[in-house]
Image 1 (spheres, one colour):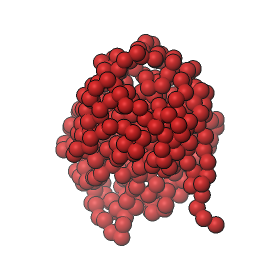
Image 2 (cartoon, helix red, strand yellow):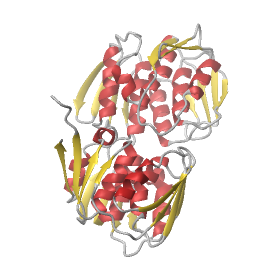
Image 3 (cartoon, one colour):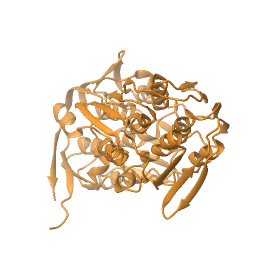
Image 4 (cartoon, rainbow, N blue to C red):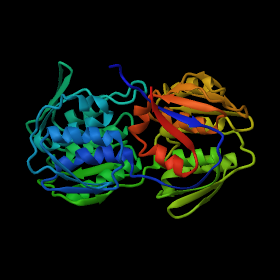
Length: 422
């Protein structure tokens, strides 16, 4: 029997209206789940999105003999009471990049971890040498043999660590390893993303002493023991941004609920510059159809700058602008594969190194396209909703890694979207 490929089909040109509720943050969830293994007791997490990345992480927890109890749709209890530090070289590890958070968590708890090289979306080189340098600074010895990292420390001791790049992954990983280190760890040039604050909040509820999360200097004073706790995940600012951009593109009137507007400031100020009609509430935003959209220039940079994860979805909207817009991505200069797919749909885009120029006001038409990564998938969904005719999107597993029930949420807004197995 041949492999059945699942594709998303969208009949474009529908005006959407209604409301959509944003799920818990994917980028926080994939770090919070590994962080739970640091506790000596059950950790309850609420707001967990139903995405395939969570299933992959749950499979890794099962390998570690950690009990995962699913209470309600978005509600899990992680109980590491009978945890065993086995080597993580199973297929689940290679499914998502965030499995590398088990490095910091298990190193922190056991002073030793063996793990296969993590996988995930290919967005060009995303070195984990910063993580490893951090572990070494805390006293660990790092070996790479037969496709696995072996990280070992006789004793973890606090240190001053300067990150050459303010990497989210490295900041969180070092923070997790440092909670049990002896003495004080200071991470300088730390990343400031909201997801880091969320992980620090969880660790502090368990009894860790983490200060300064959300600033560029994080201080961790080591403790002897962490206990279980209850934690609610922050809303997903990237999912929120995706639906806000989508609404700006095809809505008559859409309300996006369960957002933290302060996490979306860079996007909202750019949409305002474009002339998008919107009203921002305390935890929601209403977007109405705009008459004319102005071109804008975007530079994706670390938080609180414009999110690299949103430059791809935004590209689709920019094809509607009256004039020429540009996007520069300083974080992932190779993150422009979506532009090639959008060109198939009639978009007029010039691609240079680390940048794109979008010449707007030409109409998109449906075609067969490929989601090469998660946010490229989001970009193509938005383009499919804007386009005339039917769009067929391949590579849907990327989309399902980060968007909970995207079909259902869009259908509720009036989109004509369905799946087929080819």
